[in-house]
Each structure stands twice: as structure tokens, then as C-alpha cells.
Amino acid sequence: MTLSGTTTIANNPLVKQLPTATVFTNKKFEVIYASDKFFADFGFDSKNTFGRPINELFTTLSEDWENTLYHCLSDKPDHSNLNYSLSSASGPNCYKWTCTAWQNEDDSTIGLIINFEDITDKKFRKEQVNTLQSLLDAMCEISKIGVWDYNIENDKLICCDTVRVIYEVGNEHVFSFDNAIASYKDGHNRNTISMLVHETINKGTSWSEKLQLNTAKGNQIWVQVAGIPTYSDGKIVGIKGTLQNIEEQVQSETKTKENELLLRTLIDNLPLNVFIKDTESRKILVNKSECDYMGVDSADELLGKSDFELFNKDIALISRSEDLQVMETLTPILGRETISETKDGRISTFLTSKIPLKGNNGKAQGLVGISMDISDLKQKEQELRDLINVTSQQNKKLVNFAHIVSHNLRSHTANFSMLLDFLANEKNEEEKSNIITMLTQASDNLLETLENLNEVVAINTNINLEKKPVRLNQRIVSVKRNLKAFLVNNNAKIVNAISEHTSIKVIPAYIDSILMNFITNAVKYRHPDRPPLITLNTVNENGYVVLSIEDNGLGIDLKKYGNKLFGMYKTFHDHSDARGIGLYITKNQIEAMNGKVTVASKVGLGTTFKIYFNEQN
Image 1 (cartoon, rainbow, N blue to C red):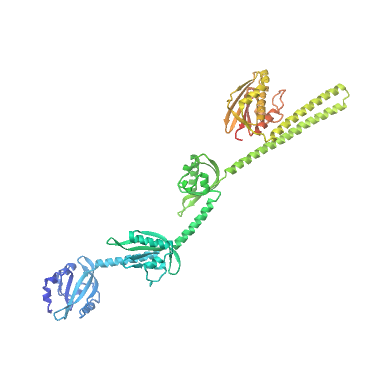
Image 2 (cartoon, rainbow, N blue to C red; image 1 turned 30 degrees about the horizontal axis):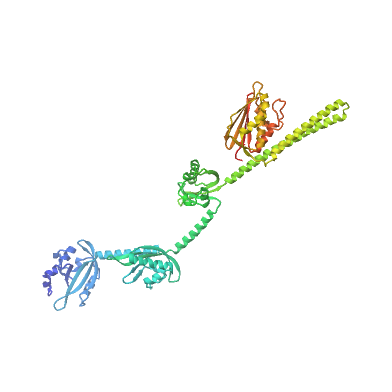
């Protein structure tokens, strides 16, 4: 079949060189002519193309392709567009067909002019945009974060569905930028958002702020709103941003802060030291009591520090060992008495508990420590123990004293009764005179006993005597002067190795008696084979000035008499002057000054008494 005008067009080099893939068909949709671009794009051979219908060239056409092309053959002047996936030389691509009726000089339709446009990239970009939009919608729905876009030039505000939910408006609501700004709570919030928008438009700043918003339904909520400038040709043309409803988060934070404040108030006002340590034993929380104990004004001075930075090394090693034990075994230490020594030397006693702080994995992430300073309690406990000991000793003394009084007075009474009975029945005047002499001696002995007992009572009941510092050498010189004749007569020598500056805190009335008693005893109980030698010396020992009085006398069998040495009326040598009262009175005087006395002795070699003068109380 011959088409009028076909040859003219086919021989036209302009048609052949069309820049797009173009074909001309007859009414049977057989290819009459095609551009070189068509052959290049689809890889067809001209010999096998001309005269073949379109559906034989492109086998992927839909079933209604023929009806669509027949529609294009109508006399309607408009174009018909179709999209098909076709195989081209570069691979499977998507093409847009633009079909136009091909007419001759008589305006009769003789076929179709089909132009093929490769829209693969456009379709891919559109699919990407659709995918990104879908992802954005999903992200907004999942995260509850809305997005908005404001165009300055046309004053248009576009918002996603999540923003509508936050503002509590329907899909038909039309946003305006001014109304969106006006929805923020009047005052600080509205002023802040207005200022931020102004700064973005004029200076290109980005921002994110937590503000309060009034919704369309009258609810007041906290939102996190953020914005960044958008540019076109280097000029700011709008603002893009996000909007998130954080009301629940703010309420939760407020509740958490209230709970934290309540907890902080509680632990800061506990009369206990409370701290939390991490796995390296560094403090990450301390309360006010812990700060006060450590002598710091702020917890920041303790946070991040370990026990090695705060305490004596030995104490820190013990504490670290306890921490590791608690965290490794997950077993708490409860109510353990511990000694703490700070870097500045302060020593305290604590009742400490350490409890493992477990994480979600069941392992220790640190520990909670609670310590109660019981230093005062320990001191009072020691004072009570000392008081009990003193009371016990006083009770023993009282019982002993009562026994001595009862025994001695009974002895004197029996002696008086017997002598008086003898006197009443005696007829001989000379015997009566002897009995009266014995009664006089008995009376003198009773008076001496009463004086001794009275002196002991005075020592143990007079608590108002004040201790004063005295130079020990001055008191020794005074006693030597008073005993000069006694020492000379017994060929006794005193070696005084005490410093001239040695001072002791004593009751002055007692020190002379103590020195005189020990020195005279050393001379009295001298060894018959050598002259008496008495050596005096002092040392300082744990708050005491210790005076040692060493002699070379007879010595005392301590295994036999040690527990009776300082008893009343106890004697250990056959000496005419031994009364057994001196050491008893001397020990009471020393103890009345919060001191103590010890003795070391070897029979036949001598005795050393050590008198501890308390310098602290």
C-alpha cells in the first residue's frame, strides 16, 4: 500500500536526524520510518524494523495497547501519553510514548507519529521521593516528631500529620505561620519562639528550644521545637523544622526531680554517712554528713576520688578489699566496725554497711555505703568500762577496807576487854600498874590504826584536790633533805638521773609522801651485805611520765607475795619497823591522781618500782 506524502517525509534528512527516538506508522501501526536515535536507543536494525507492527518490536506492551493507539488515530488534535517498560540498548528502561495523529495534505489521518522519551531517571527519582516520603511519614508516626516547612516568599506553612496531632487540629485545618507562633504560651514562650524565628530569617541561625504550646483544644503542653534556615541561590527563603510533644517527658522529669529532691533531702539529713562508689571504688555520690566528716564544703571535692586519695593508705587498702569482696560476691557487709584515718590524721570508728549496686545484667556496677560514726559511743563505752573497772576496784577496796576495819577494831576491842577484865580482877598493885601500861599501849595502837584508816578514807574520798605541774627534781631534793640523817646513818646513796626540766602533774601533798615512802622502804629493806643504792630515772610513755625507783635491797618474792604486795597491813620481811600500811597508802595516792604503779623484783638482788604519772587527766 502506498501512503501519500510518505516518501517525501522518509527522504527528508531532518526527520532522520531528529534528536529523539521517533517512529512513523501507518494505520496498522506498522513502522514506515524511524529516526536514527530510535535505532540507537533500542538497538534495532532498519532492515528488520520497517513494515513491522509496533507490538512485534516491543513484546512487553500491555493487552490494551491496540485500543490505546486506535484512540490516537482519531481526529482529535490532542496527544496521548503512555508509559511502558521497554528494553533498550542500555538495558530495561521506562519510556513515555507521546502519540500524535499523522495527517496528509488533506488533513486526513494516515498513521501515528510516536515519540519515545526515556523517563527511567525521572521515575526512579519519583520512586525515591515517594519512598523517602513514606519513610518520613513512618518516622514521624513512630517517633512522634512532626516536621514543618515555612516558605517566606509566599508565607506558606506546610506541616505533616504528626504536627496536626500535636496541635490537635484536623486534616482540613489550614496552618498559617502567624497563628502557629501565636499558639505558644503568652510571655516568655511566645517571645522566645518569635525571637528565634527572627534570628533565623535575619542571621541564618539554627535552634532547638523547649517551650509551652496551647493546642486547639485548649490543652497546654511542653514541646521541643527546632528550626534551620533553607537557602536558594545563597538567600534564606524559608525555615524547616521539627516539633515534638514532650509533655510526658517533662512531667516524668519533673516527677523524677521531685523524687530526687526528696531523696536528696532525706539522705542529706540522715545522721549517717551515705556514699555510692563505682567499680573502681571512686565516689560518685556523697551526702552532707560525708562531706562534713571529710571537712569539705562541696560534694564536688569528693566525687571521682578513691579512698587512696582521701584516707591513710593502710585504711584505704582494707576498704578497697571490702569493696571488691562485696562487688564480686554480691553479698553485702552489714554493721562491720571499721577504723577510718583521714590524710590529716583524724581517726574515727564507724559502723559500716556496704551493699552491692546491681545492674540489669545482674553484675555489680558499684556499691552503696552507709556508715555511722560511733567514735563518741566508743569513747563513752570506754569511759563506762573504765568507770566499771574503777567502781569494781573501789568496791574491792571498800570490801577490803571494811574487812580491815572490822578485823583490826575487833582485835583492839577484844584486847581492851581482856585487859580491863584483868584489871578488875587483879589485887596486886604492881600487876595493876603493868596492866594500865598495857592499856595505854593498846590505846596508842588504836589511835595509830584510826589515823591510818582515816588517811586512807581521805585519799579515796577527797576528789577536789587539784593536780598541778611540779619540778620532780625539786621534790626529790626536798625529800632528801628531810631524810638526810636517816640516809647518812644507813650509809645510803641516791643516784638521781632525772633531768632538771622534768615536770609532772600531781597533787603536791601526795608527791612528797610517795617519794619518801619508796625511798625509806628501799633503805629499810636493804641487803645486809651491801650499802643501800637507790637509782631514780624517768621516761615518757604514752601520755605518762614514768618514774622508776630501783634499789639493790632484799627483793620480794613476787610469785609468793605479788598479789598481796599493796595490801593493807601486809608485810613480807621480818623487820621491826614493818607495818604494812605504807605501800597501801602510796598506791591509793597514785591511783587518786589517775596514775598506776608496777613492780619488778628478784629476791636477793633488789626491786624496781615504776610510778606512772598521768599527764592527760
